[in-house]
Every structure is written in C-alpha cells, then in structure tokens.
Length: 348
Image (cartoon, rainbow, N blue to C red; front, side, top):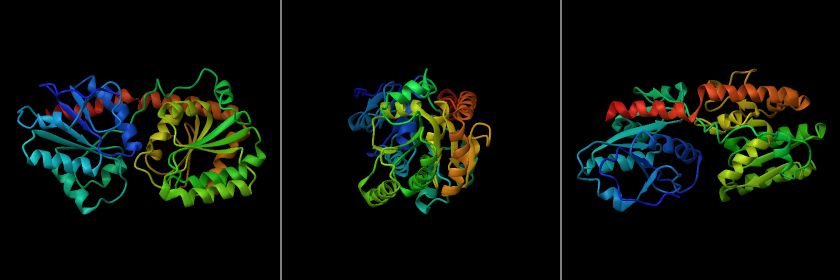
C-alpha cells in the first residue's frame, strides 16, 4: 500500500475514495488511477490506495488550501462531490470532475451537485442521457495484462480442485440486484445435464443479504448441487483474478447496473459471455459475436443462451477469443486513462 506523503507543490490531481466498503466504483478507480498518475502528478485520498499513486491524508490536504494553481478533484460518488464543493467554497483551488455510471433519473441533490461540477464524464451514452447537461462519454477500461487468458484454461481450472472440467462463473455481491437468483435457477436446470461443468459465484454475502443468500442455498440443496454450485464469499482481488482465468463461460446477470465492470474483465480473460441487457452490456457486447445478450431477470432466457455454449466448449472458447480481441481494441485501461486525461487538460 502506498505510504502517505506530503503533497508535492506541483500536485495536479486528487483522486478521492471516501467509501469505506470496497465496491465496483472503488475497483474501477483503483485500476485507472495509477495510469493517470503517469500523466499527472496525482495523489489518492482515502482507503484502498493502489500501487502506482501517492497517498495523501487529511493533514496533506489541509496544506493545499492556499495554493493558487488549479487542482483536479475527480469524484465518483455523491459524498466525494459534496466534499469537493465544500472544499472549494472554503478556498481550495479545485476544478471539480464527476464520473457518472448511473442509468436512472438522479435525485435532486445529485442534480444540484452535478451542476456544480466543472466537467462531467459518463460511462455510456445511456448514462449521459440522464445527466441534463453536457458530458463526455468515457467507457471503462480493464488492465488487459492482469485480466488475460491463461496458458491452459484446463490447468487453471484443475487448480481449483472443483469437480468437472469447465467452470461457469457469476461474480459480484450475492443479492437480487446482481441477479444471483437468476444464475442459481439457470444452473439448477442446466448442471444436471452437463456434468463436466461446475458453477462458481464469487462475491461477498453482506449481513443484510443473508436471508436472500440462505434462500439460494436452500434452492441449491434441494437440487442436490451443493458440490457443483460454489459460493466462495468475498475474496482478495488477486484470487478473483485467478478465478477469471478458470472460467470457460461468464454469466452477467444484473437486473440493473451502472456499468458492470465484470463484463469486460471476463471478456478480457477470454471467457465466453452471456449478459443481461443491463449496465453497459449493449454498448460492450456484439450480440452473437463477442457474447450473447438476454433480457434481465429471466432465468429461462439465461439458460437458453448458456446451453449451446455448454454443449460445445470449443464454441465457447472461440467466442472468448473474439471477446478478448474486442476488449483489446475498445476497452483497454490505457484508452480510458487517455480519454480522462483529455478532460483534465481542458481544465488545467
């Protein structure tokens, strides 16, 4: 973890992360921030600082109040926008940037905060349509070196110790919004017909979702699939990355989503993709080519889309190769960082 340092006099960018719970927003921020730190003198404020960017604490932040040179404050949540607006009102020379992934009408407070920003970035055209002001579209990228296909997917899966020869995964917190129940229902129907496959759900079960998770476990037990539908719980990011390499197929089952970073992580790792029409799926996936799109919240449609890939793992592998090529062309982390840097340069 980076060691907190005094802010350099020529600091240009603060990346605030004011959310204690690790989330998809934190993950996207952690990936792109070190790339931006290679182009701007940058510091990370808050927990979960990644390697490759300096860390700054409250004491260091206080020292920046009387500087004159403009300083980018790039918020990704309401509390970070609020902090930026307050700091600027108190004298910090901040240029405020906000990235919005939401695909819904915003609350009045969010709309007000958005009007205070100097620049707005949306992660898709759909997200931009809800902002009611001009925004640049910069879609998320992924570190294609970290999320890369393994030399041998069979060997990678064998390391897991799970039964069968192939894995099908669904990653994210176990809850209805992520469609965890849709995935379990589809797997309970399909796995008895395809004994070479094991299903893996990688993600935390938070206390408020324990009742929901218990219901899923009862459904799995009723189907007699306890050994073939595995819920890992929360894992370190390095272990999550290893799991991507073990997957032949990835199921993106969210009912609603801001962007859905797991889409491009799985594609980058060379997994065949079946994705609900949520988040950025329709902008990322070429239906029938680099993945298959299905209606959100529909286990029948999910099962129907997955079955041809489970019947023919070679077909799934070919789709995974096309998906990887799509990410390399359109959704690299370098492309995302370069587009964000252009927004910064217009401000400073």
